[in-house]
Length: 77
Image (cartoon, rainbow, N blue to C red; front, side, top):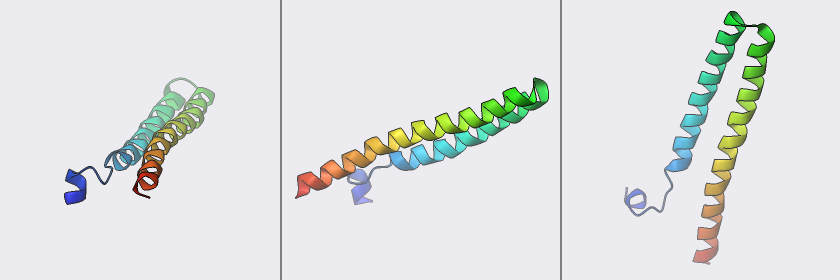
C-alpha cells in the first residue's frame, strides 16, 4: 500500500492491460457486426487491422512505462 501511495509502483500498466483486453472484445464485436451487416471481407479487415492496431498502441504505451522503470533503476544505482 505504501508503494502505491508513494508512486513507487505504477498502476497505469495494469490499466493499459485491462483496456487492451476490453478493446479486443470491442474490435471482435465490431468485426462480427460488420460481417453480418455489410460484408465478410470488411468484417475480417476490421478484425485483423483492429487487433493489430490495438496491440501496437498498447505495446507502445507499455514501453513508455518500462522505460520509466529502467530510468528509475539507473537513478537508484
